[in-house]
Length: 501
Image 1 (cartoon, rainbow, N blue to C red):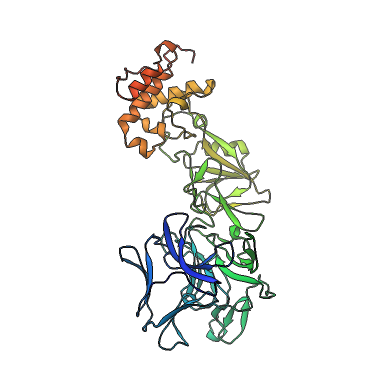
Image 2 (image 1 turned 135 degrees about the vertical axis):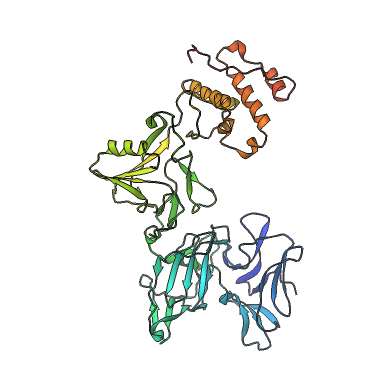
């Protein structure tokens, strides 16, 4: 049979759900009685499907297929399937001949969430989403495999685990005193049960005063924090889930590994918001690799490294230091200079092609290279953080990789404020003459795919800003040159020698 909207009393629902506001879909279980549609299980997070896909229950399994009939995911119980049911606990189960037992259940195949009455046995794991709206496997895992609950960062997109950043430390060499189940009981308490029957609470978690008025869940967030939430059952507005307790308490300080990026991506830093959740940001001169993935790391807005500026003059003409205090990447030091003052620290970084940032504490200067890892905000008046970034405008006549801005130098972009205009246009002309017009569009793929048209646009743009007005083409001529009805004349420098520009 084909399953559509399989539910029990409307509390939780198994159906297809839209994936990341696209035309793709997941087979998922979510709370259906609250405005905030909260997914607690999904089958195909790494393989969202187009409209027309379907899930079918056969005599041997539960199968998810794309519109062409290709199997994307399946639940394969060991015995024949007689029926399926969505329990009011949120557990979707397949039953065999013995209806009192389940031959497959979503509770034993969790994704990032556990619910009331759910139990994780040894060997179980939860895995985070990639982002809040992307259900692909993310950068963190909860593992209950050796008697302890552990949270591990993952070397995404592989599955390699780095050292844990949280552990319940409930493992014991004596198996009877070691943890063997993670329980989320019917009273909304989460704890570890040892084989001898003893319960082990998480040290920082309180017991819940259960009244039955709330829904509950415990989720490994895309940010790596394992959090227990509650939500009023009778909510009539868009009230969100209320975080009750989390591990670790401070995600920014929890991860401190020699390899890997840390709690945030490379070249970014972690800070704790007022509500206690971590967030990732880019330092000055850097932007996110992907605006939709704040944990995906940052990149400089200009090329960095040795060899880029060989023979191009004084580094102090190309770079500047921007101070952004109380941020540190503790494991990226490659040199410590002492005793040093701040001016010496700044100059040392400016003249060192390996240096991306320096930390100065009043006497000592630590220099760091890319990629920066384990970044975190320190709110204790830690030290001065000194970033080396490209100056906004390069020296006159300089055409080299790495301007601080990303504005294409075409037509309107060349019409800057008067003081900057001469420098920008000379730079554009030098890039054109030197065969480096790709710099003018920041290597934009669409522009570079039609190099001849790009070359023509640059030539016309430079004619339009000639220092001598009589040499500038009329708008009609500009249109005819751009459309190919007129040839573009041999280009001259916008500011000939001796010009006051």
